[in-house]
Image 1 (cartoon, rainbow, N blue to C red):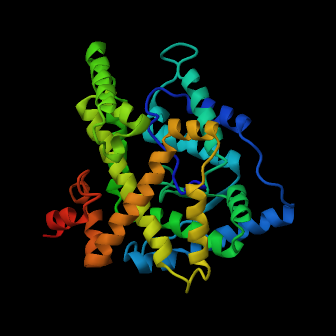
Image 2: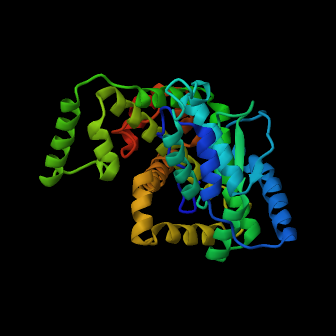
Length: 355
């Protein structure tokens, strides 16, 4: 989860040298907020403890992962997150198994430098992240300096905020632990996105021109068709558009469910949860400077923010209508995930999946 409530965007499939990306990202990243060694060690200890303490409330609210192990979280600094994220992306895109020497001495390195710049930018925004692609039970990462930075900015109770963040990230661990098929589903979709097409370049340009014409004509667009994401979809083949939609809807569900859970746990566990949510939502809505807005758009972070809103609305509505136990049918397999036309119309999903 980023400081504004989004996870790091994906989509970097292809021949990327992720060792170079990690190297560049660490060197380009900014230092975290100033703190004493004692305070830093105290934050690490409290986040580690909170990640374990969050597991019980999350399992109680969701009804998932009963009896499964509770792996230890990794509390990292920004450089540690960059290295872990590069390793995770290598596993997700298949670049970890792809030789980097086949295309010459520089194969994958220019893309690695670009990816490193992206990771450096994101490293100051990520609060925590669950990585289902590394370790026997996945890896839960918590970025200590970023948690400290945000809690200072929001002026919230540090212990409550740290547990609140852990509730969100632990929910992701519970989701993937309860539905292990999700990781393969993501890999397959990313592989489709990264597959090289053999269609004529004229066809690709034709789709892009048609999309620009639609926009000038004022045609109403769905959320996934707006902005740079919409232009990306316009250049893709049908199979790639389907794969991208699958990833977007899955991400919307995962993030919305985590947001629902972190608030549903309530003040019995996080006494100042209402104040934290109010302050956090105001921070999400706050306008950044023009350069930050451009970078955020290029990285897809604004689209991720929309995922939180749409996803939480879907989960809130379904759980309110049928209860959490019935909602959990969504984790059965790919066929029970909401479809593009269902994420904003929960009654369609209920009718199709629950009858």
